[in-house]
Length: 465
Image (cartoon, rainbow, N blue to C red):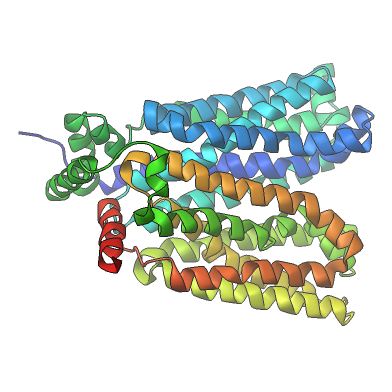
């Protein structure tokens, strides 16, 4: 007879540890914005190498997410999260002490691998670990951690840049925090990476992965601790039932029964990026300067954008399991499209004085923060069958990174050649199809177990035949 007891504290702590992968994702992708001009000056970079410094991590992301699905299905979610933490830590240490630009590129690539792996495995682990009634809130913690990572990188960059001229007794410290302060900006990632790595040794493996690999006793103890004995019994029975009918190859996802899930997994992450969120996050100062803000006030506006992104993610955390996924997506995406259209109109009409541009940018950010941002991760963590969830989520996350790459590459050209008004109208057009997808394709999944959602696809398909 087991003596394991249910503990909600245990659930929250484990999910918070996994969410640290989101913090590192946000920190590592946003910290680069404060280092570009400094690295360009120190290494005397031309335009090509400047672009390579910014985008090389993206190559690592694509590679990382491409391999993470297969590895996590084979070796477990926990081990692959540990791998991502090691990659983050190696990148932060390496970037701090590099002696050449080529070395810097190598360690940025390593950091990109960590981002790619964490961006898939952390939300996957949380979705599998959490009880169905809390799953939306727990997965939203990942997005919250991501937004906090972005804001912390903004503040740390600003603080280090402001104190770069301070005197230090040590020559090494003077170099790191003075003449080459970009080393300190990138090196701060050592601390959260180390905490993430050490904390992961204290969390268990995903119980669903354990069940799929014949380790029922371990899985049962974890499930009881998370949600009680009765719930554990139901979950084990449901996983066994689906395990007996599933194959483990990715070709399973391309069967007609999972066609809707595949389209959702590919399109929702893609559209969440081409709506322009990262254009605002990464190019906010440039956009605000075009709206008439000075550089200092534009940077202040960027910090405000980051803070609003954090605050409104809490809306999703406290409502996604109460109101459901679809209502948040409808309201948030609709509000984002409206805000983008108005921003374009304001630029076209020349209304660039006063607070109006910033107000509607903040409206767009807030709508994204409680809908597209967190709910996308929740949905793609729920809709795929157990046996291939890792591989399928890797495919969905790869779609997100492809869109991220396109937006990052094209936004400067669009702002320069098309102007701000047309750029924001294009973002609104790209965002709009997500409303149709939410209406026609995405089922409401609040309160459903992962196995119940899998059965829903099969029942829906059979009923249509």
